[in-house]
Image (cartoon, rainbow, N blue to C red):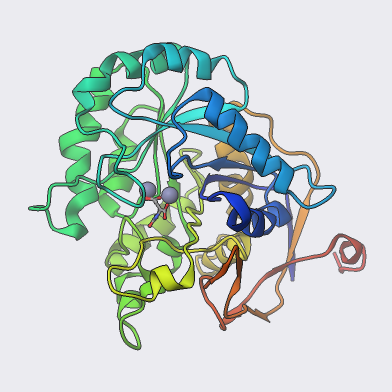
Length: 352
Ligand code: NCD
Ligand code: ZN
Ligand code: ZN
C-alpha cells in the first residue's frame, strides 16, 4: 500500500542554531518543502535583520541540492515596535510573529509580559496581514498545568481576537477539545496547528514504563478524550486545522535529568507519524489537505509542486540522532514506525 501526495509544509518547527541546527534541518528537508521556523533562540530572533541572518544560516546548512525553504518568524517582546513590524511585513521571507507569554515554555523569558503593551504592534500586524502565532498557555502558577490552554482561551485569546479586528491568528500546537471547539466557533481568520505527538499520545505516555522525559513537551500531553478531539479535527477536512510538528530537539542530557527541558523531536519521521494517526482514523485520504494544502493556503503561499510517496512499510527508528556535540532522542526511539517515505528512484516500481 502506498500514498502519493503534494509535498507537505511543516508550519511549526524548531531548528535551533549552529552545528545542532545543521544536524536537524536535513531531517525536515528530507520530506517537507517549507517550514515555519520558530524564533526562540538565545538570544531570540526579534528583528527582521536577525531573521534574515538566521534564514541564511539555515540555507547554508542544507544538504547539497535541497530546495527547502525556511519561512521565518519574529519573536514578539514587550518592546517590539510597529516600525519593526512594517519592516518585517515588507520582507517576503517573514511570514509571522510569535507570541510566547513570558515564562510559558522553552526560551520564553523575553516573551510578552502583558499584551496591553503590544496592542499598537498587533494592530500594525493586522493592517499588514502578518499573522500572530500563539503559544496558547497562561503562565499563572495557580492554574493547573493541564488547564493552562483552556484558561488561555478565555483570559487571553478570545479577548484579543475581539480587540484587534482582522488580526490573523495561528493557535499553535493545540492540545484540547476546548481549543478545537473554540477555533470552530471563531472567525475564519483563526486557525490552528496540530502536532504528531498530540495526535498519537495521551498523558499516560509521560508515565508509561516509568517517568519518560522524552514525552514531556509543552503544552503537556492531555487526556485521551482531548487526543480524540484533535484527531477528529485533523481528519475533518476543515482547512482551519493544519500540520505543525513542533519538533523541538534538546540534547539528551538536557532531557534525561532533573528539571529537564520541554520538547519532543519528531522531524526524523514526522510525516510518517502523521500517516499512522490518519491511518488509525481511517482518514489517509485527508492527510494531503492537512499536510500540504491548508497551511499553504492560510499563509498565502502557492501549494508545492511535485509529489511525495509514503509506503506502508515498517522500519525501526534509531535510539538517537546526532545533534551538534550531543545526541537527540527522537519520538518512538528504538520503536517501529509503520510508514516510510519512498526514495525517488523506487517510486516508479510501486504498483498502482
Ligand atoms: C518548544 C522548544 O523546545 O522550543 N518546546 C515544547 O515543548 N514545545 C517550545 C514550544 O513550542 O513551546
Ligand atoms: Zn509553544
Ligand atoms: Zn514550538
